[in-house]
Image (cartoon, rainbow, N blue to C red; front, side):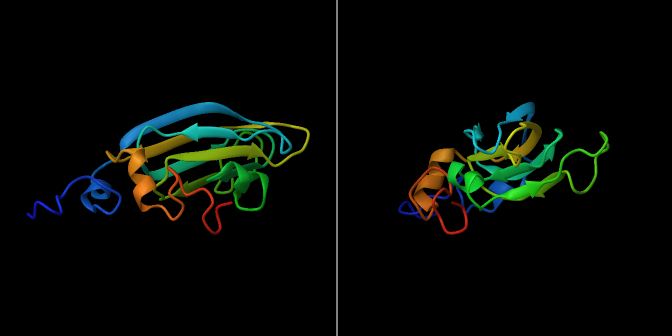
Length: 145
């Protein structure tokens, strides 16, 4: 191995994503009304997979920046219908991010979310070296907000 290019854990390191992820779970996260400030969920390491379930009674916006969920760059997850989980009230995505944001789609009623993620051993500061914006997340890049 070259001393100029040491091999290790990093954003483009395949081995970092091939191993099982470190579990991360949090529940009962409040997503404020659409005119409010989005709730930010910060992960201790870079993610490899995130599952967000809407456990509330209103549609839920999920995005990668505050501007994204307040604007038009977000995923919309349907509310829990009669307390029964369905394919429409969660999202399962494979992304490498350091944070996500949630916000209710309704202007008068908040909703809530449950989040589970698989984390890598990659430090979130490494995103700043590879992201298109130089920020520790993908905020500000095209399609993110």
